[in-house]
Length: 358
Image 1 (tube, helix red, strand yellow):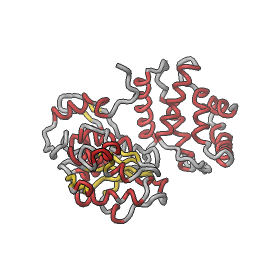
Image 2: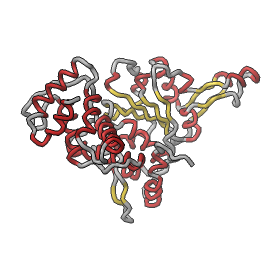
Image 3: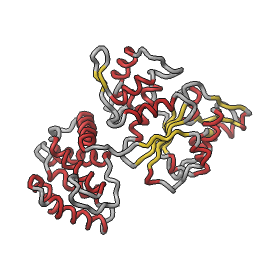
Image 4: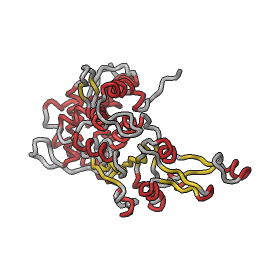
């Protein structure tokens, strides 16, 4: 059997989900795999009564996860909103895995997403041969979720055209999906709900109508509050990536992760960590997800083109490529940061030289 590059959450964390189910003594809603309390434990991590350790999937404010899970027990859908790289899709996947045992019912929102991607489509060969029938109907992830009482996920909702977004209104308000061609409808089974994600950099692209907004409870996922929190997120995700990819490299030293996170936080916030120096901010988001990507890319460089130990030279190109999105404006901002902030730091001489020489 071929090695899977990225397993679904319910496969990767199957043991944790099974242990949580065994230990679960709280009330489980209809068609949920776990109780709301256990879903939050799965997301936030913790030690079970039998000593089994559940790894944290979301590092941040527990109350946000409690609000998200509580929303999904009601008739309102959940909208996870925030900057790119704040773990919206990650949380959405893990919520679906813990609640439905299935995180695969996904609609990826793009400018080209059609109404048929949300409602239903047709097998046109069969439609022409037999006319409208149940067999000619092509079910969408949303329709399957309605029938099975599961969670459907819609990624990047605000990238979908407003007229297509509004196809969700009947589904969310009436909990049914009319099929006029068959003079029938699909009614939602208990347990059905929708988790949508949207990033605030897309604000104004395709604003949600007020009618649709009312049918969502919005939970804003913030960037990590503290340096230590962000370092912990990067460290855990990088360790997971290294195991999956079986990179012939040593795990990165905490010092290297701290330096990457510091660079990203300072440029993102427009001020140094000590608050003494103001910095111009580049055009990119410089999110936690991008910091993870920089470290992962550095590990690959170290593994295959270095000595297996992550060093400044392995990270430099990826740091610059991530920060400089605008080749004129961002390049000037980066060079100024390099000279005024990085260069004076004695312990950062290697990063300064590696980045300056590129």
